[in-house]
Image (tube, rainbow, N blue to C red; front, side, top):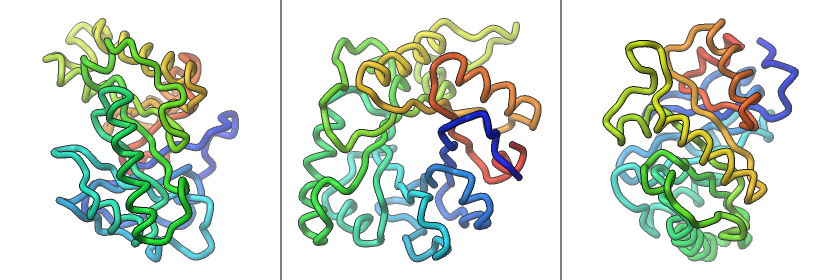
Length: 228
């Protein structure tokens, strides 16, 4: 199950709340596993990862329903999470606030300052697509942006692909905003692929993402990793 060798940045793998970790082989083919929060906790800890796999980062997706609290972040860091993915990031203020909370959580758990990374799901709200504010220098923790066309389309009352097979203008604008903000700030950029994409579509869409300036892709199931 070799992941496309022509790409230099491995994909992200998103797991839904309660979904178990995939095999060691799959974990070795992704940059990070992103575990969705179930309320204020996740079902995974660092000890769940195979001891032989130290490269794969363990991240928690936060901010879906409400802002993450200090206690939530203390628990995540205490459970060995390497970082967080901020869902629905609207701009620099969201990253800055999360940075401050992580400083407190690191101090509370004895983790070295600045060790916990931040990824931001960006250009998934109209506010972030239209934001005039740069992300450059906002936080040294911020390492990447993740664009999800489905989330942006839902926020704008449309579908990621129209009935005629076209990509809506808002999705095109969002993709461009994510790539440009990432380039401006010197960050990686990931493009979330559709959950129902088959093998041929995955390979085509991955190449399309890279051709459009993304560093790599984000996938929504271990089965998609197996198809690459």
